[in-house]
Length: 476
Image (cartoon, rainbow, N blue to C red; front, side, top):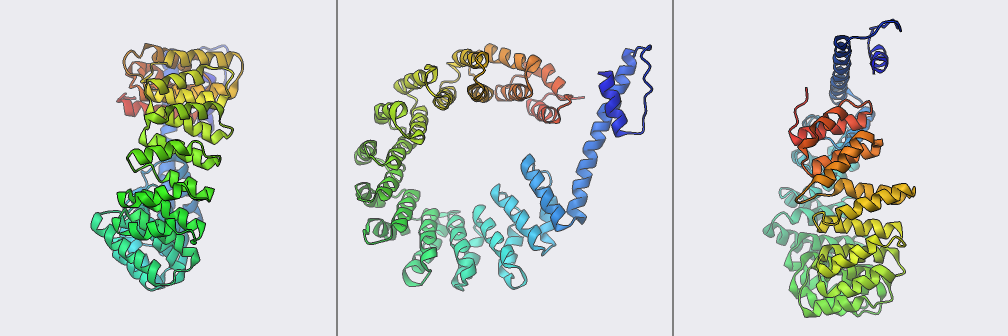
């Protein structure tokens, strides 16, 4: 430990140590070295934060773009206020598009004023800036953006149409009144203007995104029209599903029996939000469709509706379907339904060692998420078995599930697993041990967590500090 500290301190400062093997280091000297090492790390962290602030204040567009990519990877938001201030005072296209994109993918508010200004003053902005502003306002569902988006679409500037339609649909969903206003505009544009084939599907999707009932009539007509292009019929069915209005159900059920397999599968997928015996019967019947996407959609609809009547069909598909994605979706649906019959099927799939790793891992995942850890002891047995047999893919899959499991009741077993990982685990096992502690509020593991905050692996140390903070564990 002393040699390690000596190397770290020497690398980060002007302090030099003369190695004298005949002398021993007292406990007090060791504490001094440790204190210096910790302070050097803190100083380095402070330097990093200061450097990042300087980049935002004075950096080039390339340096700022690289910084955004870094904090995106780290998934941190402590620089958001500084980035908002930066955007308010620049017209640099690369900076604006980078920050709009970073905030938009997190649906983070704060840039609305600047985004609206970019649209209304678009003569002074690049196309890329305006498009990124439009996309951002849609992603955060900005109510203030609806009239501005309608205004820019009304100009029929083709460069902004595609992004504008998408954004209007999303922004319109902010409230019922706005949804109707946005839907009315989109319906009129589709019916009475020339949006071009490349934009028709986008408008249909946008009408559905508003959630307004006003679009149901048009969407139903498009969906059942056998002379219409297949992509538009599929888009209309998805949009009807988004509205979830019962007046669109007849059109969806009509399309379940369509001759085109893609329309059929889209119709089955659209059934999820609807209810009634006719809907249940259509979902169950879709399990018999030879086109795999229809069976996949049936499993997804069963999951969404938690359709208990589908359990026997899901069991058959999970065990015997020749398409892996259908088997996976059947297992997920069983997990969502989670009645006694479904749980028994999942246990069988998980414990059967002849099944593929993929099936066993997914079944185990569904069990742990839906039984409050009732089968955790079985998971530990299978985890150890996989490690003994060097089944690395299976072991890593089970390990992830162990890390995510939340136990209700006696937490002794999961605590013991965490302690084992803390004491003798690999880097990955220690990281999952920290997840176990966080997910199960295991403050009893305080000393182990504190120890890892000083780990030489910075990924472990950083995560340990974050977990300690979340659990209310004070660090010196």
